Length: 383
Ligand SMILES: Cc1cc2nc3c(=O)[nH]c(=O)nc-3n(C[C@H](O)[C@H](O)[C@H](O)COP(=O)(O)OP(=O)(O)OC[C@H]3O[C@@H](n4cnc5c(N)ncnc54)[C@H](O)[C@@H]3O)c2cc1C
Image (tube, rainbow, N blue to C red):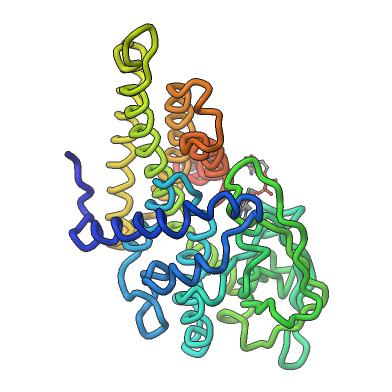
């Protein structure tokens, strides 16, 4: 059996621990989370208590002091359970890494321990109602006023938006400079006059992940909450893209592998015309193709992970992984769902949740069209 080159006994044990934890602490609460459109706070605190949050955050700031591999294993376990890893990946990996990489020692000490313990929930707010892909054109303004900045504008589609205690907000401190005017601020949402959370958005999938609009109407943020200097935000956002894109890939591959496992089990159990479904050549061939795609995806992802770890995952390969793995995820999960017939369309079946959760993987983290644009630009030969 294929084993990822980066897998170790320690990571396998973490995978098992996470799967047990999800079975006890997440799956029994999932139906309620779907109704609430958000994960309960008790889950975050319980996850923090056993060290599942911020695995790669240094221990001096309350994290696990391990590698992103540990984070990937935790996220993949969530996907394998038929849940979305979206809220978790933003809270536990994507957002804290901005603080780890760009925060001052004071900022790290102030915020990371609570995030890693699940006492505070994190989000990152870039997208605006009128600006998504064309992020350089964002309109949220941050104007310096003494020791503060005053932030005004609105954000949308923000994961963990209704629950976040700390939001990293991308705003422009100088619109004339476009990308070079973008600055990141850590906004504490409690007791923050002018900050308002809009409705929890009603999505076609990822129902338990909280996605919301955020409004900033003259919100005062101390200058001490700025990450880096004015105008450095764009470089920070770009610097985190390879990791963020690979996280999409990690979940894509976990979803594909799970879909193939579920469909294979079902095809062996379900009978039609007096025989198990797997006896039909068409079903076997469908599963054979899906298993092959999932395996090719796994080996490609593994090569990208190895390159991420040794610092050679470049700005062409990360977009390749993001678009291709999410595209194949959608195909494989759809084909596996078909094996379930009508049961595949029932929400209590994990295959149905994998299906609705997959679609957005082609949209967030940079749309797949933009991934191809980035890859394609590198192929243009100057004449
Ligand atoms: C469930 C969910 C969670 C999200 N979480 C977050 C979050 O936590 N934080 C956050 O900041 N954002 C988040 N987003 C927003 C997400 O990153 C954006 O939706 C995404 O970047 C696309 O932006 P848009 O929706 O404005 O689409 P648009 O930019 O309006 O694009 C619309 C279409 O046009 C295409 N297009 C645009 N420009 C080009 C071009 N130059 N060439 C070719 N095609 C192009 C796009 O690929 C897309 O197909 C989330 C979105 C969803 C759905």
